[in-house]
Structures are given as C-alpha cells and as structure tokens.
Length: 257
Ligand SMILES: C[S@@+](CC[C@H](N)C(=O)[O-])C[C@H]1O[C@@H](n2cnc3c(N)ncnc32)[C@H](O)[C@@H]1O
Image 1 (cartoon, rainbow, N blue to C red):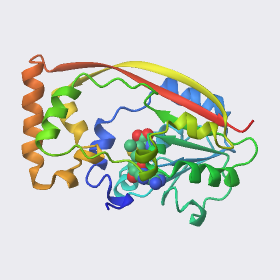
Image 2: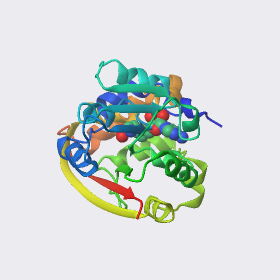
Image 3: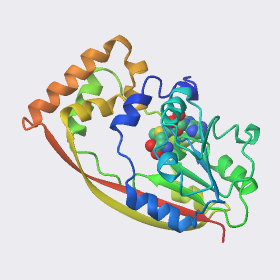
Image 4: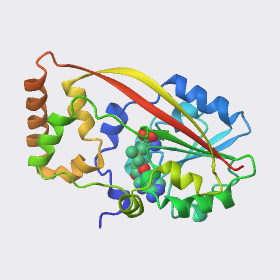
C-alpha cells in the first residue's frame, strides 16, 4: 500500500500553482467565525502547501501546519510566511507532535484521508471547550468540473481510476456530516461559497498533476504522454482554450453542544 507521505509525490509544486485557493471571503469567514486573534493557535491538519495556513497566518497567533508529505511542507515553507510552524506528521501521529495548546483545527480537503472517527476522538481530547473543527472543501453534492469528461476518458486509457482515500472513508462511504454528528463535535454550521474560475487548457493540464491519482510519481515516465493526451482532448472539446467553472466550497464548522 502507498504510504501517506507518498500519496502526492511530485505533486506539491503543481498543487501550489494550479489548485484553486479558498479566496478572501472564505478566509475572512473562518477567521471571524472562530474569532481568531493574536493569541489563538490553530492546527491546520493535512495542510498541503499551506492553502489555508498561509492566508490564515497573520489572523491568528500561530498556525501549526501539519502534513505527512515533506514536499508539501517544503513548498509551503519556501514563502517564509511568519506565524506558521511546519510540522511533519499526520492524523494518526498528532499525539507525538510538539503542538502545545491548540484552540481550533482546520482541515482543507484532507478529512477524507484520515480515520475520521478516531481522529475526532483525539481532537476531543486535544481541543479546549471553545475549540472548533472546521472542514473546508467541496460540498455534499459536488458538480464535476466542465473538463472532467474529457480528462476522465484520458485517465481511463492510462488506467488511473484508482480512488485514493483513507480505507475508512472508501469503505464506509459515510458523509463527513454524519461522522461529525456522531462525534463530540456534533453542533454543525455550514456555509457555501460560489466563485467563477476561468482556466486555460494549460492550467487544467497542470491541475491534473496535483491530484494523488494522476501525480507525477503515479504517472512516472508516462507523464509527457498523459499531459499531451489531456491537452489534445481539451483542445478538441473546446478550441477556444478558455474554460469557466463555478467552484462551490463548503465550510463546515463543528463544535461541541
Ligand atoms: C488534497 S490535499 C489538501 C491540502 C490543503 N489543506 C488544501 O486545502 O488544499 C490533502 C493533504 O492531506 C495530506 N494527508 C494525507 N493523509 C493524511 C493524514 N492521514 N493526516 C493528515 N494529512 C494527510 C496530504 O499529504 C495532502 O497534503
């Protein structure tokens, strides 16, 4: 089985460059809802290249940015953003990390990689009474991006349909909300944010290399053939080369009753 640290091997630079950020409105919402100030310490678990940690730094006292991938941490750390401590670890090793007191936990597109119930039990021990768990990511009913049919057809020809999630998530199929409702953090507040994003075919090709199932490491020497095939499929479907997408992000704030 592929190790946690290798899930996104080779993908970090593509992740930082091509994945959609969350945007100011969402960052403001998280900061305001949690009441962040210069004394608040926030754990960003599965931080990747700092998609949440970097814009949240400066809004809180300290961000503890934790990820199992050295590459992701290095990509985030190279900006030298003050107020962030980058730590290698994952949901199963939190107890071993030198975190110190943590007020809140944020997870951007990473909860599905964890053994969710076990993690929430651990967070119940870690967080103070006012502590919240915040999930940021696609909604309960995510729509496929407009280019997905073309890219999916190419992925199929390259045998890249492997679903890369935690065993627990893949096997139970239970939605995050259901898992949260069964945990100590069962008081949920959810808000959706919609943005229009414009991308070129090059952006969409680069984005594919940020996904665990079509990362550079997964593709190996087939990477040039894959990117060429994706580009050709996109150009055939949309010769204008401009793609428009409505990106919906859901922020779930889970608190104890
Ligand atoms: C899709 S990326 C999300 C990155 C960033 N948080 C964001 O919002 O874009 C998922 C991240 O979770 C990390 N990850 C995978 N398994 C994990 C685990 N068990 N605990 C914590 N992080 C994990 C991966 O290394 C990867 O950087």
